Amino acid sequence: MVTRATCTEQLLYEIHDPANYITPDCTADFSKVDFKEIEKDKIAFSGASGKTATTTYKTSVGYLNGFIGEGQISYGGSNCIARALLAQEIVEKRLKKVTYPISGLRCDLIGINSLFDDGKIPNEINEVRLRISAKTDTKEHAQLIANEVETLYTNGPYGGGGATKKVDEIISIASILIPKDDFTITILYKNT
Image (tube, rainbow, N blue to C red; front, top):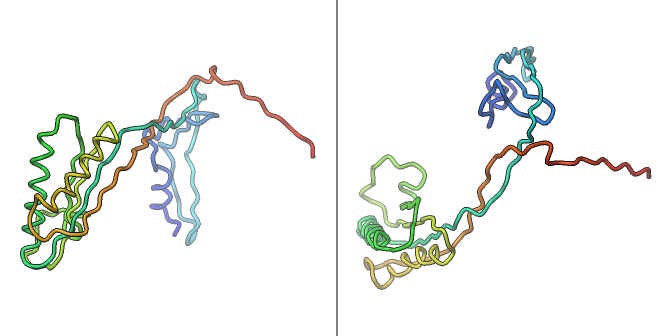
C-alpha cells in the first residue's frame, strides 16, 4: 500500500531532524516535503532540498554493552498465578541484596503481562510462566541472575517446573560523526 501516510512514515523513519538530515553528499532538508496522491499506489512528492555537505561522515558503531541474565520457570494448577507472583517477589528481594550493579530488571508472567501490562491479572488460568531478566556488566553476574530463578526449584513456591536460564551478550549501536579528513578514499578500477 503506497499512500501519503505510508510515504510520510518512511520519509521520517529514524530521521531525528528532518530539516538537517546528514548524508555523504549534502545535508538534506525534508521539512517542506509534500506528498500528493496521483492514483492508487502512486504518489508524487515535492519540496525536498539540500544544503552544503558537512565535514563529517555519519556512521554507526557497534559496541559491547553488557549482558542479560534471564531465567524462566513454569507454575501450573491451583493458585499458579499466586505462586508465580510469590516466586517473583522472592527473586526481586534476593536481587536487591546483590553487591554488583544490575539494571533493567524485568519480571513477566508470560501470557498475562509480558506484552501488554494493564495491571489486571486474571483469576482463573491453569498455567503461567515466570520470566525474570536483568542487565549486568559481566557475563558472570548475568549468570548469577539466571541462577536465581533456577534456585526456585528448592527455595521457592511448590510445583515450579521447566526452569531454564540463559545469558546473552548485548551489542548496542551508537551513531557518531567522524571527520571526513580522517579518511582517504581510493577507487580501484579493474578492466575484465
